[in-house]
Length: 92
Image (cartoon, rainbow, N blue to C red; front, side):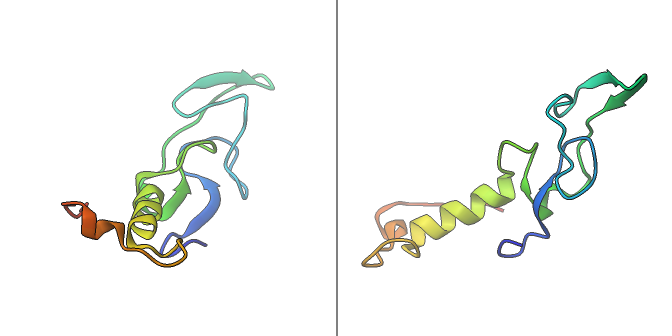
């Protein structure tokens, strides 16, 4: 689990359930015939709880956490708050 996000490895928009909810044959928003059955990769209702959007790309919530950490200097040595150099507006 990543800082406040509920699902660290499971894709929000995917097909297959399980730990990853990802099938490389059925990408987000698409349908495909698999084993004689038409399946569709659908988006979840709560993307703010996921790190991965579609098994490949990060969600907006994950990108927000990464950007805030980088801007605050949490991952630099010595720590340097980059946000003091920019006129940033909070992302709601």
